[in-house]
Length: 151
Image (tube, rainbow, N blue to C red; front, side):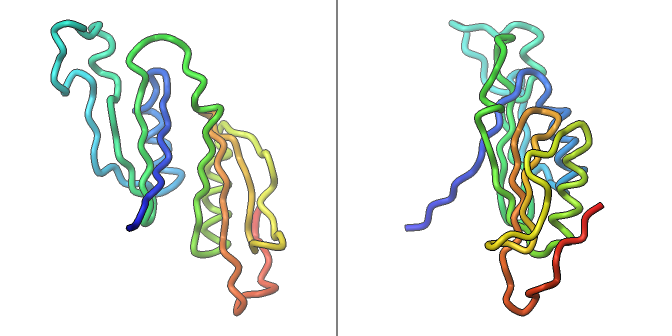
């Protein structure tokens, strides 16, 4: 049996903005998106008008991986994004460097993108939405010593 682990990010009303950001920064493709208002309404729990435009569920493809992004339905502060980390494995150091730099737009470095004993390019950044993302390039014995090219 095969299992797939998919990170799920829940934001507080700015999922649509985050989706646009990930499309640009990570070359993500939106394959599904639905608002709460587009879903079936439960008459026993009517939606507040402002919640109808919030994202109930979206699926983004980043390379061969999937990422789910949604908004909470309420206005209550949502801290889940601060507890969630995702790891994005890239095919080469150039892609890791490009993604790392793009995610720094409004974000901050947790660990600089650098060569480590397990990767020619590994770094951690917390993006503008408080999501901590690890960028990882697998070590390829043929490319040993190539190093990391970052700004």
